[in-house]
Image (tube, rainbow, N blue to C red; front, side):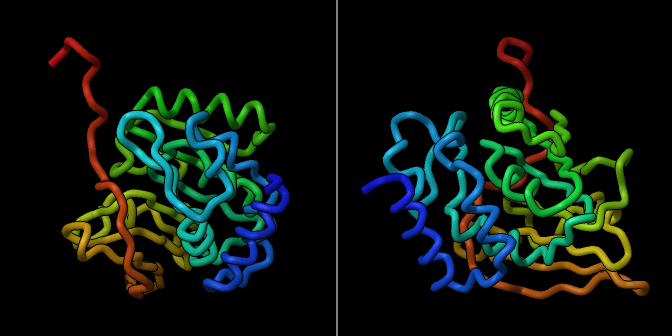
Length: 217
């Protein structure tokens, strides 16, 4: 099966599973997922499955990427904070739908590789930072949208909700362990935060404090 045929099959599967936003589907179609997938898994790049990347992390299943992106209700003039750059695939998809993406990654080797992919693809509206994603990016706050691609605990980190603009939306997996995780949509109103549970997921945990370089612990 050709890459184009695999891509069409994936887009049809996304539609069948609730991805109705045509802008999100177009972004998924335009971003070459194979550029974010390690060589041994190239034959699965357009399959609807999560795949391993370096340092024990994963590139998320396309359906989850599409549904979480759709849940953000993105406008093309908005700014988005992404927590957990990983391979860079989610940030690349977001970059086609908004004005600017700010993305934070705690694992420097992953961020370096993602930055190279962004540059190669000409994705010039993505700004990166190496650091503790649970702290957000205070210097650029408030954000109209925040997307977290790792699982928090029972509640979203306060530093992140504090950086959400009034009228803003955060999408984040929450839950104590794999069995209890759910994607949650949080909205900031004039009077506080509202929370809406969306669907069950399994994400790697949201960790704070970048790990120390080898030999410094």
